[in-house]
Image 1 (cartoon, rainbow, N blue to C red):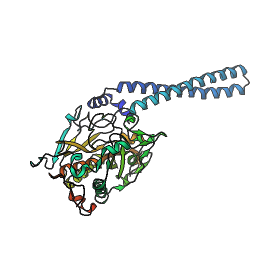
Image 2 (image 1 turned 60 degrees about the horizontal axis):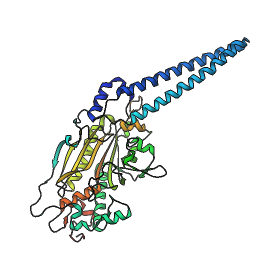
Image 3 (image 1 turned 90 degrees about the vertical axis):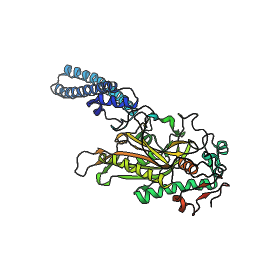
Image 4 (image 1 turned 60 degrees about the vertical axis):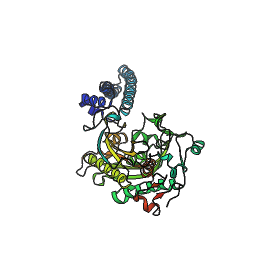
Length: 431
């Protein structure tokens, strides 16, 4: 959510930032609504002041027995009440209209975000790992690898739920679970996150507060009684601080959760229809941080380093890119994507996004902190990142570890979660 006062102070800068995102300038329209809203409020206050004056005059007329003046003043009170009601209603309508417009405007990009309109304009920050493939065989996609194919049942899942679902079984289900456990343990034991097991059904307020509503309701699933299935556990983890005034000394707060996530993929018709890269239901380990404004940029670098370190421990080649202004998510101020190398596709694919929203979400959900030295409470900054997308991580582990005979060599980081078994045989067994 944007601060209309900041727009009033520098409308040109606001519009320029929106243009960098590929959006149309809108400051003039917002300020026109804001101006009329403020005028109606002022007029209403003036009418109320007139009502108070009339009330005093009525008392005086009654006291001196001036019936004619008394009745005339009563008529004026009736008229001013009608005017006041109309002005207050108009002011409330304008306030709602302004709030609705502001809620649908994307966050402004940070100054260091490269200007661009699509993923082609994203800027590579660094690469890690070897992407040149061995010459002894052509790499397969994850669903074609012998050791994994039988345990990824898309046909049976389609009979149960429809397209873009998969049923994992046996060793593949176990490796998938091991990856999530590895991620959680790392966040909790090495990086000081608090593990949360949150609800995955949330109310409108939680979706709105984390910028998923009102603009992107079509990208998520809603139950018949109004709950939303979370598109990411960023929603409940971040909304935990909604409406609170936190103490400066208690920040940062760092939360992690492993949950199911649900997305309609409404805008991805025809994309990645084979395999389990793009699913309606998937699992993700999320990282969320609530920080002081002065610490949020450093915290984003910290979250990014954590996600990159997990990729290295899992021996997955990757590259890190900073998203351009036109490719960032709606609520992001700055986003780094980590893209895993998938030899079966001969391409990099996103496996983690690490974003800072500044105070954009905090304003929507009224999350603030009180400084040690007092003063008015200020808005916190919120950050979120995948640490990591479990299903996509499984894909990357399988494709990068595959061998010519259809087996897969698994990363040593999973050893303790798989009873020391780090080879997925072509017949689907673990040894």
